[in-house]
Length: 223
Image (cartoon, rainbow, N blue to C red):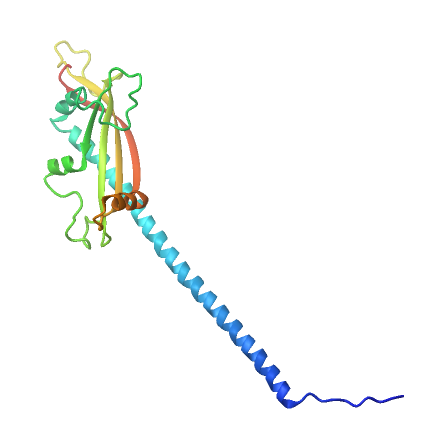
């Protein structure tokens, strides 16, 4: 039997191997911590972005609802007869984007704008000067807008509850049916002087909600 002599690894080589392993572990830990930090930062950013989108969606919903209620309020005044007559004028018939006009000869349309209803109310719809108080959209650089379209004018096919149809000499009143479409929007306020860039940013960041109702408007004098 031949015995081979055992060779021991020098201490310097053992220390070099230990240092290499330690460097690998340190680099691995730093990489893991960096990844965790980036993931946490990204998660916080996504959470903030989602919260902002949710807030803008809620604001848009209430803006659309505000538009519809504004139209209902205006059609409940004595000015309703004038609005009904304006729907049949030639210079308003093609203004409504939601009106299907192809093949329709008796188009009817009238559109309420944000500025017009704000003028009727005599007060700002949204408070633009104090962004941290009620009635504003908050500190963000955003602005509201809405459009209300009245289309499909026609006589009401059913009597309104409480209307006298039998008594001799009863007042001759009529009621008309209209379709009201409210389009509410919340969009960023342009801060760049380039109109093309402003339009692109607003279109990409704006949120829009539509609501529709079929209304009976009256009482009106016989039309």
